[in-house]
Length: 288
Image (tube, rainbow, N blue to C red):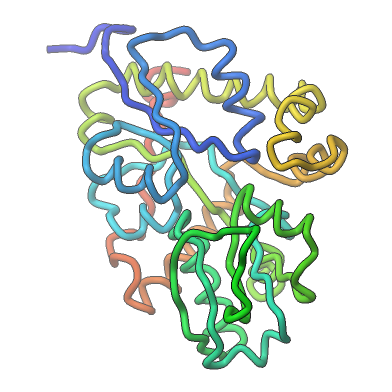
């Protein structure tokens, strides 16, 4: 039976970090669609829920798409990405990067992509192999036994404010220095069966996401005034940070995803089927 516009329910996953505020704060204020149920969670949790069929679409780590490409299509035109420094994905170190071989490194459990990226950077670019452990990051009580900590999102912003680590490596910046490409941390992914079953709903959600993002960019300072106290950080610092975030998925970002997946496939961390990328763009099909 052909889908009727506006009738299909949708289970949507949203990351509620500061870096999604330009989109999500507008969504929460303006989207009144009770049939679209939103789940807020860190990327790693949304990965599990989308993979397990508990969500139909949502922001997920780029790594999750690479791990299970048979389940997803990437929603065209949207990402969480950066060209150069991202400002919220850091390797915080007590010693120089070249001295981390065999040293203890605590990995954030919030994002598979950042974990995979730091391993590519350390092992492929710097040739060092730390002793990794993964878990929650208590920014108020980081034990001295860790020589380095990978932190993302709001945790990274808080650690940066504390200035407790003398070496702070912005992973997106290092990636660009070594590849010449931006880095895509997260994509909007749609489950294959939902893309087929409810293309008009996918189109509607896609259009609303793009509208919210544009309105959020146009109203960025006011949004920063709302969300900066969560860290806490100065409003102007929040504004500078969010101005550096990018949300498109243009040709350079596609090339960046492909390069990242090439590394992961070589390392056995992504499925060979993750390339070529599968893009879901209902705007083309339905004349949006």
